[in-house]
Length: 250
Length: 94
Image (cartoon, rainbow over all chains, first blue to last red; front, side):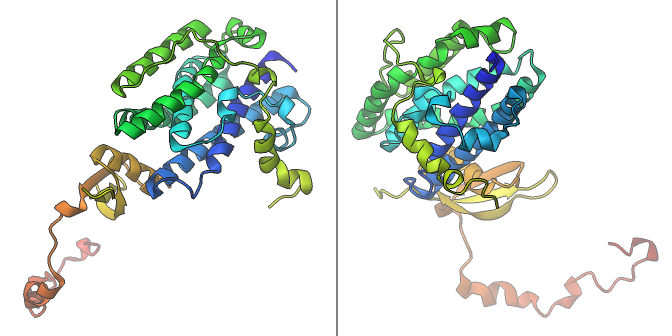
């Protein structure tokens, strides 16, 4: 499988796994309005997944469409980063995960909007409108809960501290990411990381949250297919129908 | 203070040139989140170009029991409707 195809799978899988996790919260949000907002984000991400995976399937050239890639690949073939497979946990955990993801996602889409690959550019330009809102919403809630009551502040800080080690993987480029930078498809890691960290620092300051050290040791491996056991459970639920009834359709 | 978020009424303008129309209500802690929530709850199907929110508590409404005094006097004043004027053929779609 060539580097671009792998790179597209990574983008599609990030959006897909996070979308699936957010879907598990449908009907369980802390307020009707929050519930709808989260499921809107999940739907946006699912729409983006389809665009990334169908392009990846075409490039791969083995006749895999987006559905086959989503429902018939095993965890070891998934290329999402570890952040998106972290548990929903409390609402603070869900929001901290979302904010860390949205920040990276926004600046990545911004960079991919100038990609040398026309199709990638189109997907990024379409996605960034949605992602802009995602980031605005999750950043706003970080500030509200971080700078809210004593309890909400403590919960938010704990969530952030615990998830922080998963926030760096996206900026650690391997040979596939580097090949994409060399071809002008993807933005360079250094710039992306700086933009994301600057934005995070700004939001954390307003939220009165202490930003963990950007130089802390970061978990990695998801992009290369080394996942936590959690991904297996997420996929088991998501893929059940196609595994049990192959080819089932509406 | 109540732990419930206050109620907001949501008005959406569906296209330029039309007036904002009341579409429903929602709960939110402040105006900014009310706008965000209105976007998420009421514009999922491409409904709007502009959103207004107003605290439900700030809206002053007429009382249903005043219906007679407020509206009935207009009932028998048909001459207030412009239906007695002969209209030229050319403006039949008015």
